[in-house]
Length: 270
Image (cartoon, rainbow, N blue to C red; front, side, top):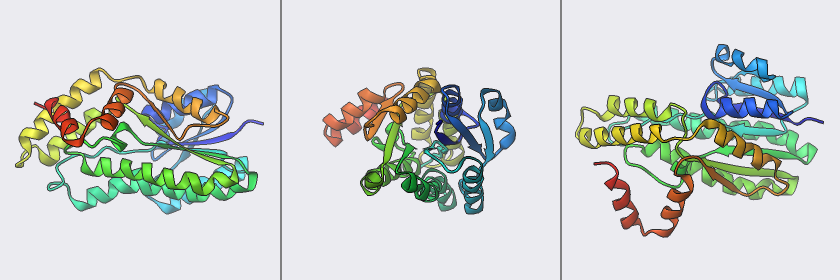
């Protein structure tokens, strides 16, 4: 019997590629996003569109209830919805910081809470949390984005050992540079917040770095295939990394002392 999958953030980027690929691979896929009109194109691939605002508890509950009533529950939850909001810590309003954490962390956690009872009952479940190499490597001007991704890594590590006893796997996927448009949007956001402050020189250098990364990024399908590999593994790994520069960057982060790693990182932003 085909497994039921909920993919959040399905209107674009990695979420869209993943929802489409899994539907074509025989899964029953619900693709969720705030703007359901942006999901209509996915219907031709068999993706079922559903409205979801991960910052609204009512919306999250309604989404899960709909899938439960139609399909009997969620077998595989893929938390792909995300936001990249940038600027120097000193410049970013706390309201924007809280919104970042609501989308990247708390929304994912709430969906997990609601999906787990059904998974425990079936003694089967897969929870895939989209992190980033930014969950291991912190760039300047991205304090709140990196805080959210470091947090999803820690949440996943803890959760993995809570729910293993119920036959539920928790998997972290760490994309490197991926053509999602997030880096272009992030660069513009960066300049809006810090382009005219004491951090303007660093902001301009980082925006140029983002533009170069976007040019050399991987197609979202690369990460979608990695996600499919992770959920189809009999014994999945705790983490899967892929996309441009993901594995080399994670290896350097692991091997180099902090001071040397910082020096290498900042050399790219001149």
